[in-house]
Amino acid sequence: MKKSECKRCGICCVKGGPVLHGEDRPLIKKSIIRPEQLVVIRKGEPAYNPASDRVEPAPCEMLKIQGKPGSWECLFYDAAQKSCTIHNTRPLECRLLQCQDTTAVLAVTGKDCLNRLDIITSDDKIAAYIQAFEHYSWEKINSLLTTLSSESIKEAEKILCTDLIIREQAVTQLQLTLAQELFYFGRPMFQSWNHPGVHLFIENGMPRLHRS
Ligand code: SF4
Image (cartoon, rainbow, N blue to C red; front, side, top):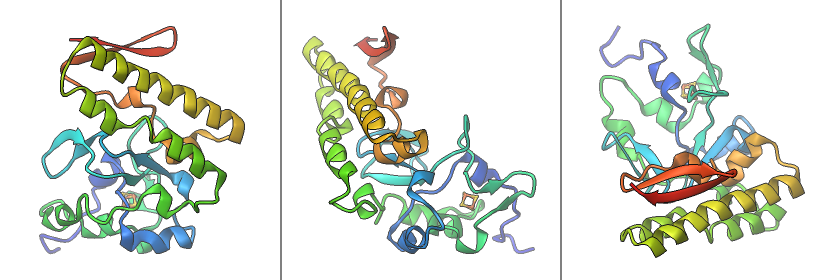
């Protein structure tokens, strides 16, 4: 076996599914990967960056294959067989990734990433919800928290609460499943909270922030 050949240890698939790029668009078109099998990582959301090996604000919106319930393990990974159930049509990042040399996959990280509006048509009724939702963005929170004043922390807290309220309305009115919610809105913002200077806690079902 060549040093660069995949040994099928499955570690990369267990750690999480790939982010999709422009080259992966046909996989969606052919329904090899369906929207409800993806989770959106919104621009500015704290996310693991393999290039820096740190959690950092996402540089752009990204679509990632969802994990299995309660884990990050890629939905398409067959743990018993240690194999990918869509191996012949696996996405770009999976084809590029080699455990011993991550140069090729790092070269595409954060580039030409697919986003929700590449998949949803503008006349889809969910598009209006997404646009309203983006008014309460991670970018706004990140900008507010460049200063840790009481006002900016209060405003950031309002965004976290509005995130929950709008998604709940959409889930009820459009009868979305959890998988669809993850594609259209991503994880609730409070679940991705990762700010060293601002502590988050839940009170009466709503996220609250205070300076650490
Ligand atoms: S799509 Fe296949 S190769 Fe890629 S992470 Fe998932 S199981 Fe692994």
